[in-house]
Image (cartoon, rainbow, N blue to C red):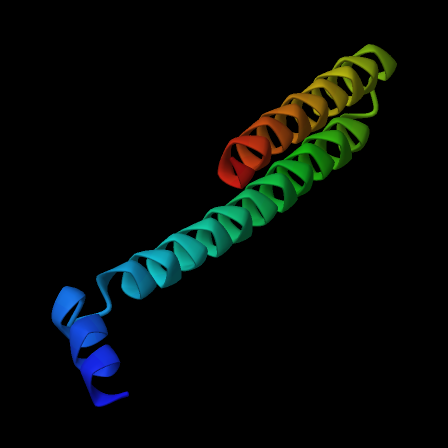
Length: 89
């Protein structure tokens, strides 16, 4: 058994493969956390845009702001979904 352990340790004494796997897992988690934050931030800015437009009290400005906010949320969601799919690969 000592020979097997020594041979295994001699082949990879620093467990590089394990370190690479842990690094990849941490990078995927950080990427997903960033995407969550990105989507949340875009949503908050979109909400702020709509609230500001409503404060102006001009109907066409509110409609444009709501359309823009909706588009921004949709684009951010699509972007985040696409990147998440890449992170899974």
